[in-house]
Image (tube, rainbow, N blue to C red; front, side):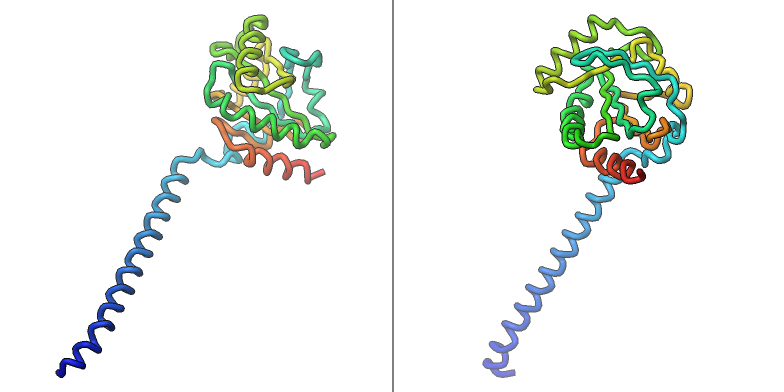
Length: 211
C-alpha cells in the first residue's frame, strides 16, 4: 500500500468512527427517554374510570355555605349540571398546590351555564363527623388569602354525610379528592391526589359535550 493510499483511507475510517459514535449516542438517548417515560407511567395513579365510586349515584349531599356564598348545595342542585366537586383541606399541601388551577378552570368556564365547581373545605379529622364551622371558616379564609385565591365560594360537608356516603361505596382514601358528576348526579370520574388543571379540563369538556 502506498503512502497516498494510507492518506486516502484515514479520513474514511475517521468518518465511519464518527457515525458509529453518533448512532450509539442517539440510541442511548432514546433508551434513556423510554426509561423516563416508563418511570413516569409507573408513578401515575391508576385510571380514574376504574375507581369503585364511578357509576354511583351521589344522593347524600348537603354542602353548607362556608365562605363567600349563602347557597346550600343539595342533591337537587346537581341535576342538570356537570359538577366538579373538590374535597380539600386548608391543612393539606397537595390540596393547596392543586386548588388555584381548579379555580382558574372554573373561571374559564364561568359562561358555561351547565357547569358548576364546588370546593368543599374539610378539617383534618372530620371524615364522617361534624365540622367545627367557625374554626374551618377561619382556617380556610386564612390559607386562601395566603395562596391568593380571592372571593371563591367555599362549602363545607358540615355533618360529613357526603363523605360518609362515598366511604360506603369504597374507602375515602386521601385529600385532595375530586369527583366529576354528570347531569343526573352520577359519578363519572374520580381523582385521588393532586392533578394538573388540564386533566380536569379535558374531563369536564368531554362531559359537557354529551349534552
